[in-house]
Length: 288
Image (cartoon, rainbow, N blue to C red; front, side):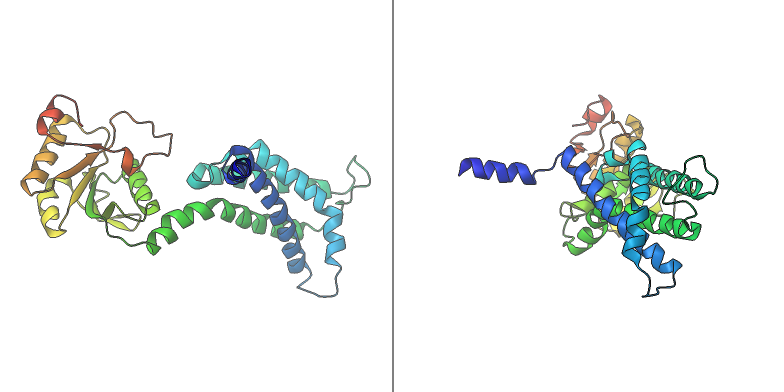
């Protein structure tokens, strides 16, 4: 019984191989579906066409090239939960290059004879390129979309009313992690940033309310219960000023991101923040 439980647990536990296998198999199905829809567009959704025979004849070319270039551009190494802009660029590039090769193979008088894809309609390839790009990209961003948007909206937002100081990359990562956790610990209500170009703008649908000099007013107006300082380069003097301003207004929960942090890694989260407990620790360089 124990061996069976361990086997079931190992089967469902995530791993790099399982992730690659899942996306590889999913892409095969998506490319088949994409080519089918492209043929439908090409023949104006006519029901008198033998679509399966047409697809089976050329499908190997589409699969080998698209899967091959996705692998070459390391798309199957993308972390599903943290897919970002650079990952999407790799997907677009891989599929674009694959479709360019497909178009070349359709050209007449190639030195390679008897290709099933010779004289293949380029209109189908163009349609397939757009559809497959939409499907492959949609699958990659689905988990992040669920974790940061739908799951966050569906959960109760009972966390402390929180002000984020810093509307840059660190602030964005903190907001993203709050959404993934359903705002159970902290519920952001606004941001502050000293960049005048950011004041009045929105980051993840959250408004930059003003500069840090307006901290006391914002704390009162928004009934702030917690502060997260998301500016890793903030000096001790400015950090102490923000800390003392918050404590004067009875805001005791003040956290800051670690001073030494590698922003090439997307794992910054609320639980990894450091808590500021005293102004003397700030002056001495020790935050916790």
